[in-house]
Length: 124
Image (cartoon, one colour):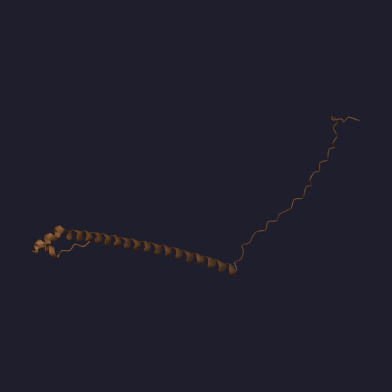
């Protein structure tokens, strides 16, 4: 049996280099661009867009004014409510002082009234 020769290197033939073919330069023609002409549909869409923008601005301003008016009205109503609460508290305090036993006794003395215990009822 023959022993394999591991030191043997096969000869590789070099492949010829293929040079890319040069393509001829294409000349580019520059065409000046002209402004597009406006037709009726374009003008209508532009006018509609401007109209919608103007209406939107007025609506935003109107809503803002209504919010400011509502806020002012709310502040005014809150002030009136606080004033009414203060007046009610003052009246309750006055009722408490007028209906106290000392004040009732003082008014009874001025009017020369006397206490009749038989006519007094205690309610619970």
